[in-house]
Length: 453
Image (cartoon, rainbow, N blue to C red; front, side, top):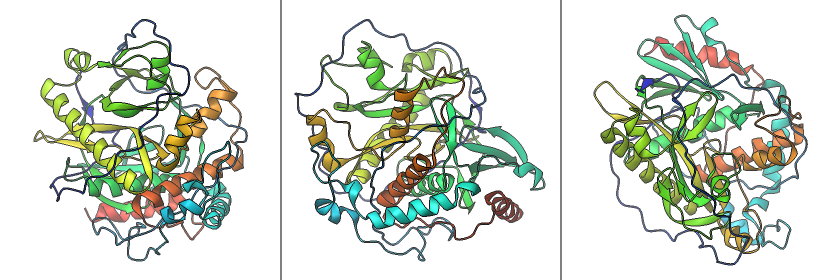
């Protein structure tokens, strides 16, 4: 199958190579004694069908979840690449470094040592309060084509809505929360967090690959150049973990020892660090992701060998750099996914979102080794706790109707997303100070931006 036009875009980035960064210590290595090793049945045959549009998402809801305490972060002078509304701007207030408070933070229970997640409870409470106040002003759906002249709706994804305007795409990141190929709820501030997180990473990964970002006229919006999208998601993993059907731990625990062309040794346990990062690509089949080998990608015509090799190299380099930056800030980048597109002149660009809590899994570095040695789940700073809740309380793949997400869980997830943004970027997240409907604000800002292109 050939490439499709870039209307499912989620972001992009990169160009010049900076000075080499100082070497960082690797994340703590797991010890050998925990858990029961997975069984060793036959290999999986991952590839099934060609890519097709996803089925419409179903609205779900959940019940409660134990509260977690997460910290805020410090700040440093911002990049000037993006518009002034971003929280990287000079108006962002400086916060004390959260890592300094780790030793004094409260424990997380189950005999675990003090945690980064317990720092600055006052900031967490303030964010939770703001999230509760914004529950009625989430961006669940958009219809910019009805409000902005000349704008055409191109695609509605699980999280992003894509509009066309001449040679540009307008990418609106909503507050919709998705997992298991379904939309679960609307999370206050989520769209802003994802958009600004991606912009931050796009700006800082230009030494690895170029991107299509033109501008960001609104907290939830990125305007990008058109390109043809490769129908392959480049999933990079550093640990044996996960709870979805395509996660590495799920397939490994079922006996797979060759996954997406990667040979996996026997005796590994959940959440164990791999000896080297691996690529496990997927493509779309109807309404779900399908693991696929590099050979199947090339032989089926999804990508040429040259294009695949270049995109694979970029994905592995992006992941290694992301792990380095995350560890500098007390986090482990566990796994993530990338998407790439190709311009008319043959340039391969990073698109979609980059290292966000939606596309990536993050753990707290300081507590990883101790919790792994004790057989405890790592402290996660992403939506994995939501995935685990669904796996434990319903069948998120087959149940037509799921429990409703309570306010407590929705606000907790909003806080975790903001915590991750602040920890990675070292800036304070700028919570909108007005109750102006988000859709009206976006429509006004996009209309003005398109007039100036």
